[in-house]
Length: 408
Ligand SMILES: Cc1cc2nc3c(=O)[nH]c(=O)nc-3n(C[C@H](O)[C@H](O)[C@H](O)COP(=O)(O)OP(=O)(O)OC[C@H]3O[C@@H](n4cnc5c(N)ncnc54)[C@H](O)[C@@H]3O)c2cc1C
Image (tube, rainbow, N blue to C red):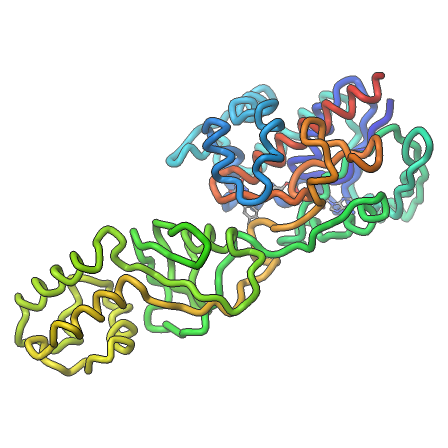
C-alpha cells in the first residue's frame, strides 16, 4: 500500500495527509516544501474563501463543473478545520477571504506539514523524479537525491501528481513534470499567465501609480467587470484587470478593452453632469474644468482624445462635443499588447486536461492508479482564496481516493 506524492505544495501536502493508512512518500524537487505557499496572499496566505459551493464555482474561470464533486467533499469549512486541527488558527476578512490568524503563510505550511506527517508521510526534499513507468500493478519511480546524488528506484501502488502550474517558477513549479505526465498518456494544455498585469499600447506615464476606484472594464465576449484598477508603467493592473486577464488568458494579442470611468451613470446622465459642472465654471479653460469629475492625472489623456483643445473656454464647447466627451469617459479604449508573463502571474491557465480525469476521485481515466491534485490541473479561478482552496480540495480527494484504492 505505497503511494508516491510528487510535489510539496498545498495540494501535495494535503494529498499526503489525507491518504490515510497508506505508506506515503512525498517527493519535492526543491530544497523545501511550500515555497509558493510563502508568497501566497502577499505572505499572509489567503487559503480559502468562506462561501457556498455555488458562489465558489462562479469564481472558477476554467472547468468549474469539474470541481463540483471535490468542493462538496472538501468545503471552505473543512479547510479551516484542517488548519485549526493542525495548530493554525484562522480568521475571515472582507470578501469572505480566510487567512491564518497570525497573518503568516508559514503557519499554513507548518499545519499542512503536520497533517501530512501525522499520517506518517515521509517528506523528501531535494529529490528529482527522473522517470515514472507504469507496470501491471503499479508504478516504478526513478528518483535522484540532488544533494547526495543518490539514485533510487522504488515501486508504488499509486502516484499522485501535485506538481503545480508554471507561474513563479522560482517556487519550483516549473513544468518539469509535464513530460512525465504526457508519457503516462495525458494531454497537457499549454500554460498561459492568468491573474496578471496587462500591458497596453497607449502610454499613460503621467498617471502611473493612479488607482481608479469604482470603474468598469469591458472586452468583447466578457461580462463588464466592476471595481478598482491601477495604471502601471507598462499598462494596467489591479483587481478588475486581474479578473479580466483570467477570462482573456487564452486570447491572442492585440485585443481591445475599454474603461468606463463612470459606470454608475448612463452616457445621458454623465452628459447632464458635465453640463452642470461646465455651467458652474463657464469661464474656465477646458483643461481645468474636469477636476470635479476625474482624477487629475488621467485628465490630460481624456482631453487629448476628446478632440477639444485644452485651452478652449468651457462656454464655447458645443453640445455634440460634450456628448462625445461623455461617450469617451464611458468608453476609453485601450489596446492590450501583452502581459507581465508567467513569472508574475498568480496562477496558470492550462495544465492537465480534465476530460481525462474522473472528477469524483481525481484518478486518471487513462492510467489506473495515477491521480492529480492542484494547479497542475487545467483549472483556475479568480483571486480571493479560490485557487489555494482548489489545491487543498483536489489534493484531499486525490489522497483519500488513492488510499481507498490501495486498500482494495
Ligand atoms: C504571488 C502569488 C500569490 C498568490 N496568492 C494567492 C491567494 O492569495 N489566494 C489563492 O487562493 N491563491 C493564491 N495564489 C495561487 C496559489 O498559491 C496556488 O494556486 C497554489 O498554491 C497551488 O498549489 P499546488 O500545490 O497545486 O502547487 P505548488 O504550490 O506550485 O506546488 C507544486 C510543488 O511541486 C513541486 N514540483 C514541481 N515539479 C516537480 C517535479 N518534477 N518533481 C518534484 N517536485 C516537483 C514544486 O517545487 C512545488 O513545491 C498565489 C500565487 C502566487 C504566485
